[in-house]
Amino acid sequence: MNQVIIEVNESLNEIPLSFIKKPIIIGGMAMEYYGMRKAGRDIDLIISQDDYRVLSKKYPDNKKDIYGDLGFIINKFEIWRSIALIDYDFFLKDAVDEGNVLVVSLDRLLWMRVCAMEVEKYKMDLDLMKEYYYGHFRNQYYLQEYRLNNSTN
Image 1: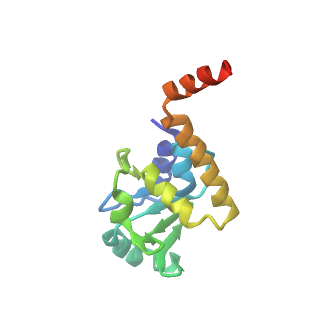
Image 2: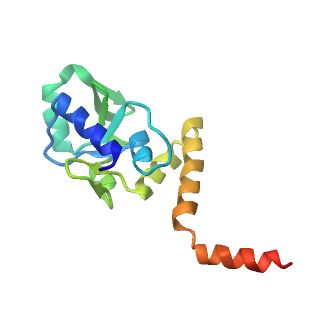
């Protein structure tokens, strides 16, 4: 099992938090999950509106509001109802199922970084993501053919 999933599951069991729908790992932990970089120690999650309602009753003093994105800070978790006012259902598309949690898809993670690229940290994440895409999705046959054709010139 991926180390990120082990850490998230252990942290969820410490509180314990339970959800109606599986939370979606986003942010640095998602980047670490895909092997792009190490995450900080906070764990960012997107949750459904129903889960937000339950947590808002259970943790009324832990609420956070960033320009209308409502969430909670609970121990090492930052738990959000939305990012840029885009909710759980958007981030659910193509998310990777890891049992108790989901991991945001590469495409949705890329979208998140593009939206925040004014911040230097996220601009650096975009460079890491570009290298990840090149390393995992470039057609190696084409690269080999290119190198062969250009080494004789």
